[in-house]
Image (tube, rainbow, N blue to C red; front, side):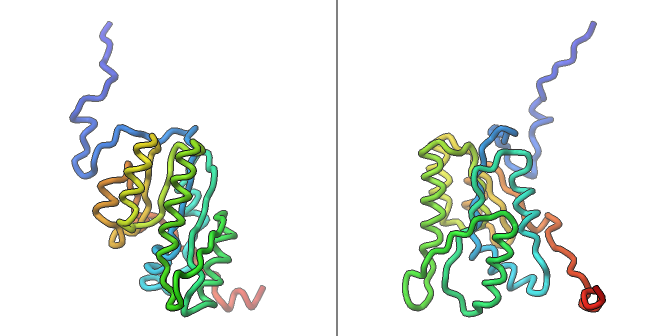
Length: 198
């Protein structure tokens, strides 16, 4: 009887287009999802101003079958177009995220505090051993040092971002990267005439 070697060969494992990571997510992983809303909304408003982006599906795809310990969207409180962002924040809440609003750091609307808040939340969960995986929805390279510190705590770090917003440093540091551009996340809005008929 011939028994085939079930251990994959190097050639089978080596997918040249993407880096190899031995740390794999598991169904039992307790996952913390942190959405950098300012980073993501800037891209949405610039490139998809008339589209209905499905944050609920984004969250569902991010977590998968894993245990979600928390899904938090961190945003600032200062915007020039308040109505638009109020609608966005309402949509975020109804999509399953808790909204964490950080006050502007000065009168001109500087929002450096949002990055600090995301870092503190992620690190607190890691230090208190409340999560096995942190999933950052952002492309901001400022989070690269956070990723390294989370690795030191034995936490898996995944990143979801738009391709042209993704920092090369963050991409190289994360255990896994998923591009939002390749995900079907635009909802089809009912035609206004159809809505009037209902």
